[in-house]
Every structure is written in structure tokens, then in C-alpha cells.
Length: 247
Length: 77
Image (cartoon, one colour):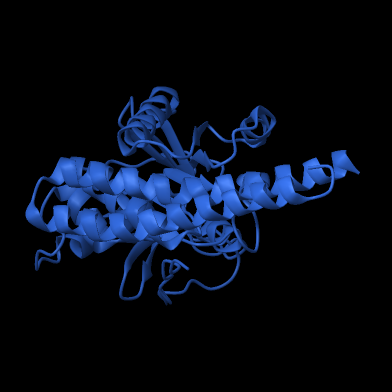
């Protein structure tokens, strides 16, 4: 699970990052609300662990901008025990609240519960731009045209669709699709991305009015992401998006 | 007057309580992580972090105590 920890207290932020990494999650830590919103909008993490007292933009301000990362579950951490504050957070879109000080075991269990809830309500259909995948039927449509994929191509596209246009590193793809060491010296990801690109592009004719069909875009030095169909020339490569640094 | 003073004290203590929660959470979590990991490096890290966080706890408690003493000495306190 990809987790974004938003906590301005350095010691606590580092501890949360380390603890959740030990639990097997991919964790980034940022120290203020503005950075959290930008980071979450760009990378669409599965879970945000959000402190309420933050510089630049406080936790409720982050929650108020949740439409920019609508698919991210949010666990709020608060040092204040007022019931009204917790109710406000839940009404603003938080999925759960935890009062400080707390046990790491409880935090970890609440994260697992949130993820179980996500999976339970997860739609079998993933969409991005012109690409639609039905995971129950194991089918893929591009602008209504069915595309035949192998199991690995399907798994690769599923990960990219789940990221909803956010970049996915080669290391992540290696780990999640091929279940091999992310540091492996192999070009299997690039090879399969090429297979997938050809199959997706072949499904839809290029239109002069709307530009190229949805493709997988290379993020130089980092990985790949899906690009939705749009006007204008296609770019083969774009600059990488760096994960923001914690305060 | 008394009500305004109580509100100010309430705000100050609420802030200090929040300040107290931060190191307590880190302290408890670091110790729990060390228990989970069980290796010497994690134990050392927990002890090192524990000393720092305990100092933050003491500082917050001292500020709360001073604030209460000020309130007691204030006219009508």
C-alpha cells in the first residue's frame, strides 16, 4: 500500500514513516498541508495519515481539498480530544480518526481495516481516459474496442490504471507485476510496456481532431504513467515528478 | 474577567496538552517498534529517541505547571 504521512513534528513523522515501512508499506512523509495536497493530487496514494496541526495549510484545509485525491483514504491524527473536531473531520471526508498519544499497533490495525474496507467497495471496473478494464470479466476496452492482453500485460495495465495517471516506477512495476527484486537488472518492464502500447494504440485509429489515442507515457529516469487522449502532439518523454521532501 | 482568564488558560493548556501528545506518541511508538524488531540496533535507536522524547515531555509538563502557577498567583486566582 502506498501511504503518505503528513506530520510537521519531525520525530513523529520519521517514526511513522519507519514503522509503516516495517509493516511493508511504501511510505512518503511531508511536513505541511500545501505540500500534502500537491503530493496527493500528483501521486494518488492509497492512504493519507494526516495530522491536523500543520503549517501552511492545516489538516481540515487538506480535507477540504479532498476532491483532488478523491480515491485516497484518510486517517486523521489529532492531539485534541474535542468530539466536535473529530465529527468535523469525518464530515469533511476523513475515513477514521485517532487520538494522540496512540499505540503503533492500533495505528497499524486501523490502516489494515481501512484497506480492507477499500477492497470491499472497490469497483471491478477501472477507467482512465479511453481505457476501461473489467477485472471480474478480465476484459479491456479502448474506446469500446476490445483488446486481447496476456496475463502479464493485463496486470501491468491494472497497476497503471490504479495510479490514475500518476507515475509508477519501474521498480514498483517489477515488484507488483513480476514479484521480483525491484533492483533486478532486467528490461522486462520496458519490453512489456512496448507490447502494451502497441496493442492499445492498434485498437483506436489516430484522429487528427483529438490527437493520439491514450498511451503509456515514459517518465524519464523514473517509470511510466497513463496519458489520457487530448489535443496536441504527443510527447515521447516528460520530466520526472519527484516525491516531495518532508519538512 | 475571571471567565476571560479561564478561557486563556484553557487555550494555553490545550496547546501544551497537544505539545505533550507529540513526544508521547513518538516515545510509545519507538518502544513498540523496538519490541517488534527485537534487534540490538532497534533497541539502541529506541533508547536514544526515548531520551530525546522524554526531555520534550518534561519540557511540556514544566510549561503546564508554570502556567497553572501563574494562574494561581493572578488576582482572583
